[in-house]
Image (cartoon, rainbow, N blue to C red; front, side):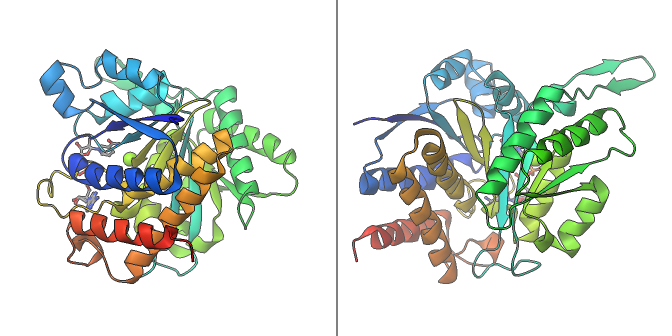
Length: 345
Ligand code: NAI
Ligand code: MG
């Protein structure tokens, strides 16, 4: 039975190479766990701009409206016209970016396990810049509604985690009104979650703490631009951008994609790390559990994470992690491991 329609956007640069592995993994899990997922390809990015004159063709948006989720590879120079637009069109208000230590991957500290929850629809990403002649002004809209729902998302996520802690990151000492509203809203929401520890931190101090004491963090909730910057930093703190997954979550639709870009410097060489996109698949399956209470999907997500840990432990790594495996070889090892882990003991 087909329960979920998932759109696949293969993207640009290394996108098609890592998509091949991620789709293969998804199809393997679909069979092993009888997930009922069917796939549909959609166009988007520099390739679509060249072929159809639009980085985000209207047809793609129409197809996505009928899908439960989208698995998206990175796109190139047109990223702002694709993912930033999609976040706004589908109101994907929560950008969730976990950073956890992985086996055999060098991290700054041994017990890092944090998630950045980034507000995904406003701030300077609204793209409102005014040209005033000799000056340019960028507007930074921050609304109470967006602050409230992102804070709610962060506290609810913290409830499911061991440390049960939320840190709001801001610059309310300078941006008194905009970040002031964000901080004040987080504080108000925190009162409704008495069982969750809450603190706040200035963004510059948070950038430093992510290096000096990353184990102090659990869930970080922040506005759009700070979240963009801190999440790249956090991915490096646990060993690299190539491993970092993310989710763009809305009420009824979500897009899952690796944090990194299209890596034109290594495109076509067959050495891109596919695991950031593969772990985005596991976030998608976990979201199917949250959204549709699909226990099967939850099990598939957990097995996928175990398989990733297990191949890394064996030293199956692409060059960015110091290994010498190709993208496809990582995919093959992963598939073998998935089949092994899903067999009844
Ligand atoms: P990037 O993330 O593509 O690359 C930064 C560095 O990390 C490069 O040295 C690259 O080789 C390496 N890297 C990234 N992913 C890797 C992987 N999976 N395996 C091994 N190494 C990997 O960032 P950059 O160079 O700033 O941007 C390149 C293009 O990507 C730009 O055109 C940008 O617009 C686009 N981009 C798209 C995004 C999206 O679609 N969501 C997000 C970020 C950037
Ligand atoms: Mg970014």
